[in-house]
Amino acid sequence: MKSSRQGLPVLIVSIVVMTLFSFGSAAAQGKAPLVHIAKLQIDPARLDAYKAALKEHAETSVRVEPGVLALYAVSEKDNPAHVTVFEIYADTAAYKKHLQSPHFKKYKSTTINMVKSLELIDTVPIALEAKGEIRAVNEWHR
Image 1 (spheres, rainbow, N blue to C red):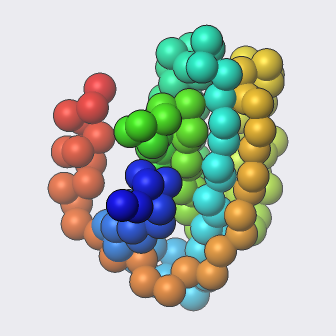
Image 2 (cartoon, helix red, strand yellow):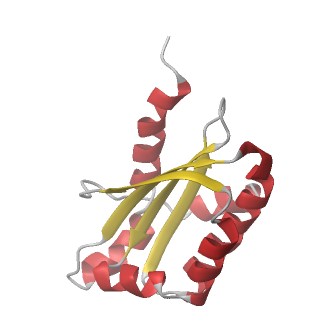
């Protein structure tokens, strides 16, 4: 029997496949999107506070930064302190701008003592497709 952690790549690929609406604008401009996967281990005692900070950060980033195309965050069902964030930026410049944004700096300073480990993985996009209904899924979880 495979662990839920082994199923995580399938979930990530599924999320990537649902990102057409975001990728289309970058592709139309002739720019390659920058895609990262962040794997975090959160202090279980601080998990609720971390999730609240992450939700605020993701919502603000996507709403106010044109270059932040998508931020998807999931936790493992059997180990909710293991969080994976799938990030899509229009390009490297958009990512660098994001790192300097006030809301990103707030997120980092708020969560610094909540995050036990962070692994940032650079990726090469293969297929980024999505339907607009992905936003409806997000609303359902609020």
